[in-house]
Image (cartoon, rainbow, N blue to C red; front, side, top):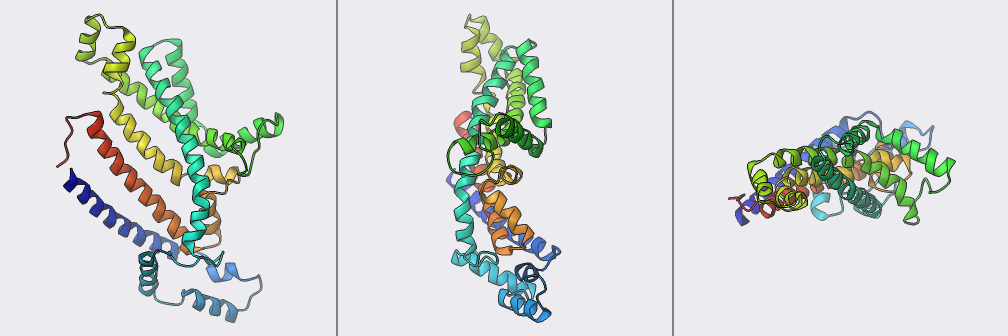
Length: 306
């Protein structure tokens, strides 16, 4: 196990190096000059050239990449063009709002998606089963931005129950968390249902039933644990998706997280900030994947890593 973990850590470091290359390359071929966007409209060519030189944009790409890697090694990830502060600090200020939003959405996903899938499988071909299938299909079909706007219009504007933008109290978290949780909840519910149906058809489950065990015991003690591996995989990936993919939801609700920061930074070509956000998102995915793989050995002791 220890050798496996060390090997995965080495692979993770190589993956992050590859991500840094791709991110750096893509940002440099994007149209738009950061110097022109930072200067007031009507700035002269000389002013643009001077600012480009100050930002290091006149250097060859390999020199710029070397400076970028050096800044990573030093832990400051460069200086934000827009905020004139270390990009690390700019992103760090926005991390907690995104973590709060992602954790709230993930909690909703686990609390509603997993039980709905289990109940739908246990009550196969009943009204509850058909209703859960319909709601899951609806949750996966509705575009995130459309659902967010409808939430704002209904609960914020029409009914006036909840705030629609900002980050001042837990009440501000409700609408964006519900919007962000809609798709993963539907996905997890459908996956849990199909995984449970497969397990409930196994011979050992029929044997448990033939022994006279109650249906609740059969489902909770014999089926759920064996059906959990694909669900855990998807749940683990959804954590990364929620942390790194809350861009649209944060923009709709003006949520001051790293998703909205990334969008604003892309429009302003603030390369250092974008690089930190994307590399951070990649690192989160890598760590979560490793934790998910290690969780398999807990759910199924037959799994061994060498």
